[in-house]
Length: 329
Image (cartoon, rainbow, N blue to C red; front, side, top):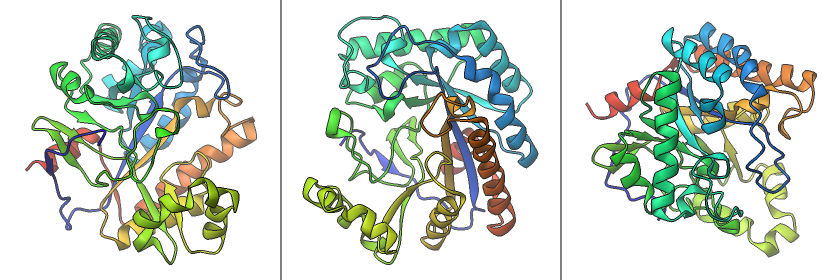
């Protein structure tokens, strides 16, 4: 397993449904090209007030997990530090190895997952990132999300040694091993302690459809080569049998996000984590948002989902730090 499970932490069933937001706050780069250590533009950070204004309206304190180009660029660091100083957000760390010093070793799809690096290099990169955030934003990060969700065997110990207390890299029911990433297919989809002082808060991923209860067992078979050739995943989704949905406005409609949440509530879920990339707010920087009109629709989906979660679900806003405290009480 990519992460050890020291102890599961059941979410109290009397907890009011709580919405968490994590933004992968990073440079712009060509998602279809090779990983480029020179692609370090962070123009998208100037667009983040658009999303922050929505979260302010609903009392949501997002966590911006920031990578090295963001932390090392004065304007972007100052903007995010300003949000944090006003109590409007939390700041965490997000490691993209190919743009994070020390720039050593070969850059490949496999080494783009930081957990695949030699442990000493993974530690050196995360230590450099942690110190850069502390120096340029004036705060010590204690929340981590690995770039490309790439945790590895050495990651928990490194995080604990550097003072991290929360990880949010786990994507339940998802396998990234096709190009060397972690396989989370058999990992818990609820909070758990990786180590006694290191908590895992997984992303919100769930199954919907008539066969949702068997999703963990059936879904991997739908994504074998033969099943993909027959287009079985699409057939299963369109027929209402089985679909895996992540709580994100990226690649998902408002209806998808609502169905995912309704299904989670029906299964007794009380924690919901919405995630997206900061670069989605800069038209053309990601495949998800290619124009200003699509960016407006993206922000509208976030707003409409927050309205739904608050009014229909009776939900409340939360922060990762607050939830970590509640789970350990």
